[in-house]
Length: 69
Image (cartoon, rainbow, N blue to C red; front, side, top):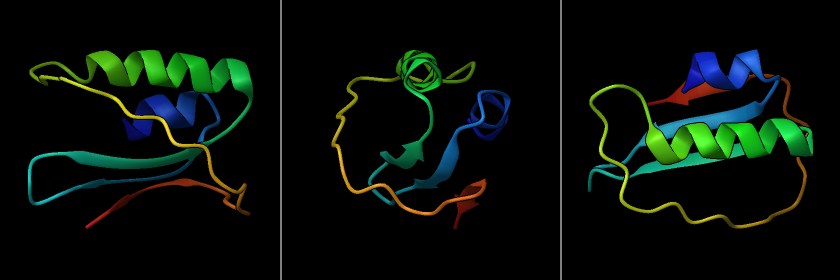
């Protein structure tokens, strides 16, 4: 996801949650965000994506895409 986000100039973060879900915060140009969401709906090889929930929030001053632990 990090490589995909960076290739699309998406800024934000991603974190694997204890319950098996993945929490992503992302911002970028509309077209890039649409592509990133499509990628996330499939996920990386071996992933099983059941559901994506989009929530619009306030724009933040983000300058990279990070993996949070």
